Image (cartoon, rainbow, N blue to C red):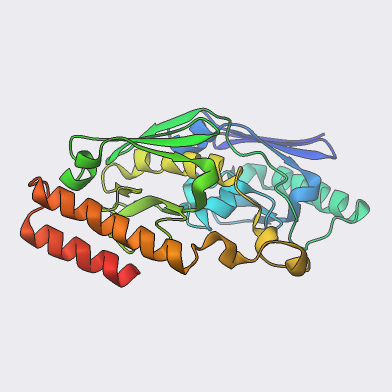
Length: 294
């Protein structure tokens, strides 16, 4: 057993699994503490490195592409302190960190673990049900459907549409961008009907606009990851088995459906305008955005 215990967390390697447990100190980001312990199977690891610095170093593990739904959902946009695969190491424990890294590297060589992308997720992602309250509303996922309940501060267009419920089978993908504190983020649910929509997140009833507490809004990545883990693996859309799998365009509505979706979106906007939910200016702007998207 190779193990290192730090205020930032604990890494333990038993020869087959790297068990990563976040620390409980207040300096450990809320996202890592909420995400909890991560058990990384050796076959998911592409490499590991210890980066020594003057006062402290960093132990980092690199996973194979396609192995982890968290990395797939966040696209490398998690802030460094929130990255569960990074451990801050005190300078007096540098030797232990090097030992842990070397033990993992040795096991990768002995087991001849490939570095190529995986054909399936090797980590499960967060358990469901999962629910997160963000600056734009509360988003919940129970494994079969997504539900969005808008906050009082949400745009009135969203509040007028009521709670949004989306079956996981209707989803094409989830798009996530964190709220950095300097730039707003979003969590968008792309369905067959909205795949062409270009509405801004603050107006899109299929998106959460993340503009409040960056620390808490970051938790929306939990929902994005839980959903991503249940969507088709990215290898089904490309790679060597391209000819055997459905083409990416299968998720795009055919021309007739495309026209029906456009008419339905315009009809919904017209009803909101007639009911006084949308002003003339808001209606014109939103209608133009929908038409550009189609």
